[in-house]
Length: 326
Image (cartoon, rainbow, N blue to C red):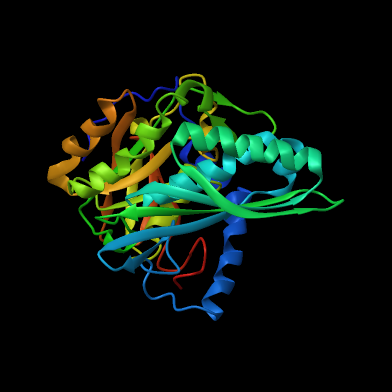
């Protein structure tokens, strides 16, 4: 049992409200469409493809991580510069969540000149912050809403993967809590606060992978924190208990909005029980938060509790987020 510690937020929502908000969040309910992929590819090996955050490809003498992201059209339309940043951010985070170091980005952009310029400017600025090169892509001018996808290549030595999740492992949440919640989209941005350290911070995942203090990871993305944790668990179908009192949150955040937000920098990790302090120290020595908030369990239920009440968010024996591993 984890010793309770006060969360950064003054008051926690009811656990039943947490469950309701997360389950109806579009970033969770919309993931079911991914199940269609299983009709066309072998889904028996999440490490080597189709992958959880990315997939590891074995090369002669090395291994690479490959991944890709499409940015929501509504976000591209409203904030093309921010969408360009997000395209790099999402890919770099996916590489990091596999224990990799980002090496290159390519993109596919179709749209009007003005929007395309802003998209590419955002990508260029993000690439500088993350110290990763944009090495090519595809550009088409079109008199239509701009669309944006990007893809990343990384190098990995010791991969982090959902396939490594086992009962008894600690569940850790690492994040940057200095930032601002956007009002138009459920994004928590720490780009301004982290711009000078993002390149370093995102490579910390490779460090804990290589030293063995973490074995699995998942970046928090459109499914939000708890939805992303369910995605980390769904291949092995092990459950986890999460103590919301231990969950790092920005001090001025609405907890319910934080739990469905896509932060610039937030990752779930599982660690051997005897390596928790080692893993947390890697992040904490760089001014980031890394807290043990629960454990992987023998059962299949992902539960959330507040010390007095507990509720089942999802039973992975009968439910799934993506349907990919059913």
